[in-house]
Length: 463
Image 1 (cartoon, rainbow, N blue to C red):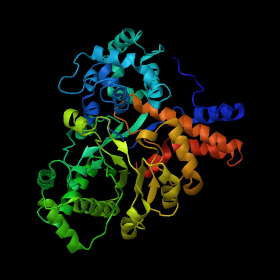
Image 2 (cartoon, helix red, strand yellow; image 1 turned 90 degrees about the horizontal axis):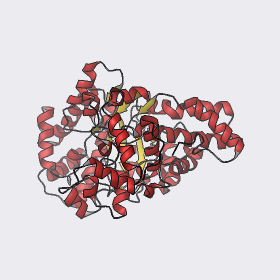
Image 3 (cartoon, one colour; image 1 turned 60 degrees about the horizontal axis):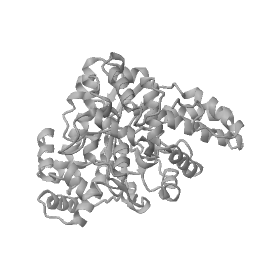
Image 4 (cartoon, one colour; image 1 turned 90 degrees about the vertical axis):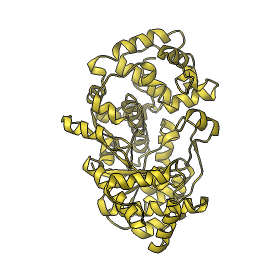
């Protein structure tokens, strides 16, 4: 299984040699992780991970969805009321099906983690399952494999988590008070208090008012409660917000109409049309707030979340059944952009799952509007081929400097360095192609490699 030093580099000898050089210049650069889903308590408590299955299998949606698609039950992966409790058995199931990941980025990430973190070079299979499990389990209690030590080893500079608007951020406060130099910052994710169709929306809005100390009985009070919570997050190091809407639809209603709409959704007197209109209005309101307070706004659109009603009911949310949808950005974002799109303090980073929009809409939007940056390939496309398609589709129109660099968007700690390594290799390959086809000079490619490895993300997220 030993990782090949030329993995993902071009087969053409001249391009491969240049890609090696470009990659070598950034291979050990500090990691900036401006958007992801690691647990804040990992960083605060710095406890050892429990077992190999907890580290590699159960929380990884890329892993579980592939196995479930091939008939492996959720229970065998440690999920559900009748779940398998023995982590070794979960690992054996994973290992016996590891061949399913051939050709996928998951295999690259997992093998990178096994080799670089645990020194394991045998390929995972049913035959090697127990031996590899024992080696990982034996290593996990060591101090050098606690979360903070892993972050320091791989030169992780900053990690942004994703946190609900009602979170007390106590773990973030604990990290800051510990004096640990790695920046662990929260991100304001208000979906549960801006989506009228979210479970418990009315109660969530009341709780928003309580924790903000501002009544949410009125439209203005509701907006001010958001402002107060955003300030609270900024006090804990946040530089960004994140919005996971199915569509990028925005609206800019007159204040009296917006207030009347809020009264409808607050009291539960709404239909699907009113719910979508309210979400659309709130994206514009959040953009206005970002222009006021300087928090970077991220919009992740184009996913039908929890597509399987059975999985949602039986196993809960976020278990791998989120499926991409076609969406359009040009008309949808126009109300927001016409309201605040030219404000120099607004920064809006767009993420899409519908790759057709890269060339058709996103690159032209970012190539014109000063407030828009392109987020990196997301979710199903944060693979080598996905990154290469993205670069080819957006660079000629938007250039490099209208992008937000790379983020790993992962829940798995050891996947952070693995994903950044893959991205740096993909970027080196793309830059090598530009140089060898005489569209870029080599010194420019080296400058860009460094920018893409971290500086673009630092600038985009105002770190």
